[in-house]
Length: 273
Image (cartoon, rainbow, N blue to C red; front, side, top):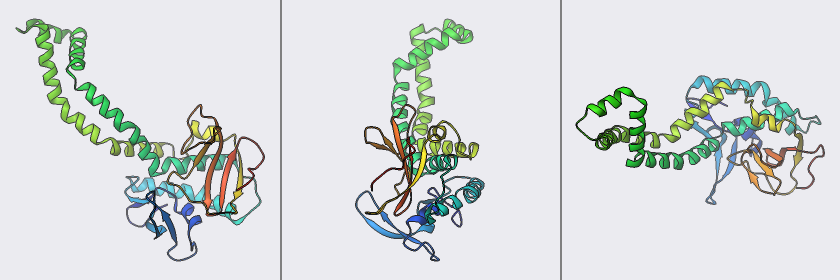
């Protein structure tokens, strides 16, 4: 959902409203529970939102239009207690969408890539790697091989000279690419959303066969996590997203303080709190 100006919600505002203290108020508010134990009350208007999160305002508008057409009524019916069968296509697409859009997904990808990029850059900068690349280039490039033959330097010295030149030219770019991982991931995420606004794909296809149910919580209050969706594995552990090959048994998606939808492998609804 859009926020006035250039702030974009990365968790849908109509989903956040289910956790509001006063959803019908002019300025709905909700409690925020931080990982460090701090809690505070804040307005939904600016919560879970970031300036230019989707880059292009037109993309944010497209997402808002899609949500208004397909999901606002879906959640309203579920929260009102309407006794209706949950469409697995709508539920599975919605579950994938809310996770794929969230800031935590972007951070998870960046956290995985940053150490990989740092290790790759460290490897690329070694003399051994550069020497191997220089020898390979001379084997595959006849002009470069002719240059090496005509050079007064030995082949080893010629290769080392190219290593030094390559390192001097590449080092600033390597450092820049390592520093730019998070902005690159943001661009990838936005491009993926733009190309697949309906959020199809293998992850949705894995959720579609699940049976979806409404489940009320009678003790305690649900907290909407920063990944929104929780995938429950056969060993009792939870993950923010399932991967191919996971032994997934249930998918939980809280939609209000005392209500969640859950996708299960069996047709029977989950029992208990």
